[in-house]
Length: 515
Image (cartoon, rainbow, N blue to C red; front, side, top):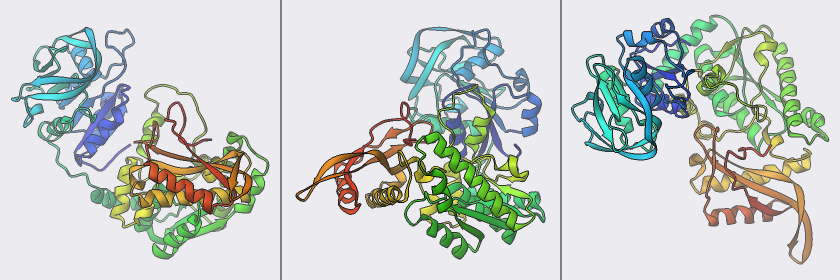
């Protein structure tokens, strides 16, 4: 990946669960950062041209025979380097210091006392609360290094070779449990690496427009528009760059939420004047899904049918050279597989396979961005807040929120219930704080009483979770009065429902979606 940004920080990933968090913290300082594998060749690092390097933490021990180690050329590069946790131990090990197993492993909150004369801790009080997570410790720093912080269990909780601008921390400055960690990173990035806060979403938009124009030339671009944040912001950005040479295709699969398809068409065709082809394929999808109850079969049918329809509509347009995709930086990071293979839990929500089948070159303006940064681009482009801050919605739509068979009656029930959930959560001012909140239609009926009559009707489950990236999630402790209001409205306003439940499962062991 290449970028136009002049001042940037490169993070070498040794497998820490916090590596993406380091990149985000640097970007919050308006300095561009990227993550590469721990064994990135030094020639590639030099070509990238960073202003400084950060070595992430990781689960390994440098004392292990197969310990992951970086290209030693980084220590001869003249670049400032910050080692964090395992990164500190790597630095010590490769520069001939001594790493040894700690007598007491140190996990969790700790207090460190630092040398305030060090550039890394400039402006911070002498005693700091930090977050430790290590089993090894530094017994002897390498030649040229001096300890600059200590804790009760780590005589070398931080060290520095100020002359070579090498710094290392035994704790994690990137996590919220290290309250002043952001200022430590700021000192490294600004004072030690000499970076300035020049990477903004305004500059990103300007540079992206230039890059899209250079890449596309006089060609034509096709974009699958879902109405979600990523494809919506990408469509507006590309349209700003090349105008009517962008064509967007929106496929209504009949599995969208209440009023969603009409809103997408109105926003992009009428307000942004984008060339939008809207296809109502709801009957076609529902026919294919008739009698199907297995969730993986549902996903495959929905994904394959989308590809067929998209290809059919693309063929009507004529010659197209590029396909636009809202690929995000976490997708790029995961595709590199720094941490080895992982089990497939379920096929991904988003439709894939288009580029290989259609032989189109890709335009991916957000390959360098995290989700929250795409939202900031959307603000820069004046997209409406209801699109920018829309919660993630799976590609198969309501198809995986109806457990069991999908038909018009069950879709109608779920749409109405889901609209009530969203309306009430927005009314409570909680919508932007929650990663996802939605209704699920269960494949069971239960006995109830309405008026003086016995009922035997459907059950709706409510799901609301908080998450940073969707990889892990916790259920939201919604206020009881809000839950009561949602339940009452669904039972009274949605014909065919007589019971509402609330899902209090976290991910893991559950998943965010029910299918």
